[in-house]
Length: 325
Image (cartoon, rainbow, N blue to C red):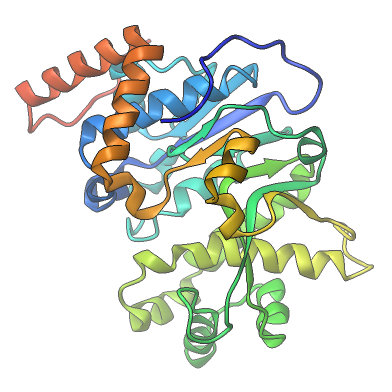
């Protein structure tokens, strides 16, 4: 796992808050399968939090009771603020795993950067990026029809069942736009816009009139990025071009100009940014490098992780319960 030896750097003016989110039910239902093991999932948490807190003085976790029991009480991650407001999703369909992130975005009340669990910041984000209304990892370009994004299929399903569509979505799809923003890292300074975007995405998923369309769509785990990444791009494009919008002129600053740049080792190294996207989380060599890195740089946290795993193995059927403060 590449990156410099950690040192506590002085915090300069700019974004101060780094945020992570974890909704435990989707992880227990299916997302645990994307990691080589539970140990490596927890090691990624350690590295993500510990690297980012070298640059951002305030750390925050948005999770549920089981997530707090695992990450705070069990793993001992040093968050300044912990919220279990994702308990509100207890009855939600776990296939909509993106709701955990969207709820976390909507909960923010000041400039922030949200990091995925598999993102490691070896360097602070650029000043121009931290000053932007919205920040994201990179743009993604794709054919409107025939790609891993399926905006047309979802649009047709909702219209056919007389569901509800956000105006930004309808405007963007009508233009057959094929662009999204990867949210491995996401945040910004325009909290009003970010709250509006996240609230609209949540409403899009949860709207009673849309449930029939989602049933027709069927398997949707892989389509969650439509409501986070594609819809984010739609919201920015819509409000940036409508002079009557309260968010007129909003824009996003991306760390990389394309997905290819984001996963180019030289460019990612220069940016001080690692994202273990997709199949990388099941790569045995990368898993070994991750473990070596955490064991070397954060030995106390590494040992606590191993102790926690042994405790969980001793009581495999026990559901983690948050200890009372």
